[in-house]
Length: 204
Length: 152
Image (spheres, rainbow over the protein chains, first blue to last red):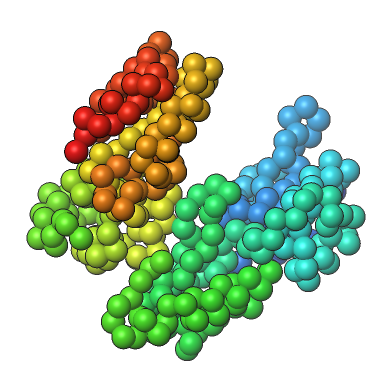
């Protein structure tokens, strides 16, 4: 792989061509916060927490580093007042859904996010898609997927597949930033597994 | 389920079992059957080799698809701005009273399904009630019952 030079936070680093800014920063040992990124998965750009500023002066713009490819002489800033303010708001919005997630709380402390800024809407899922994508891309089992859209979007297990495969896998459980996944699994197990095994499966 | 598996297979075959035709296949089944039963989604997933989780994602994403049975007559009441100022809310309340269902529901005899829509594109006719694609424009509360009675 060809190497190209980019600048991250004033430091010259050499990164592989075709990498994303986030991967480039990781390879140079620079941390960018993220919730929906996983090394084994195709970049998703869902949580927007890895937002960084690229370019200089008037041409500077905000990009999501997990889906932005590196280019020669790219100048990247991973922390600034503006970026921190955006990350703080993103965290506050996510905390309205999952106020007690340890992963979110650690980030909230770092960025000074107030978990009570927005009215609580405890859906617990922050739509990072890690479970859905891991099951699809790595395990190729497709036991869990997204249903519906917009404010009603949620993860849902397919009872027929989940009853057969999940007990032996559960690899997506530790990926979940809020632990909602485990709760959703226990719920579907209680509601739909027994009917699935007797042959009257339901996706409801 | 009213649509049979053979008919679903026929529709899928018309699209050469291409996974990229998923939405088109679902639209055709929806068009004939007015809703997508679980058996249909299972069959489409199996034949097109698309995971059921993805089929469900798509079928639940688009408002054109219904995952619950629909009545024989689909009533759409326009709640757009022009219809709103001309009293669409009263028309909706009247239809709710007459049919006993709320938007998104179907009555027990499977006669009517009720939906609100945000604009039907014929604002000059407001308030508009559309039944099975036929627009009933400039409708009044008193006319609503007479229009609904025409449908069996």
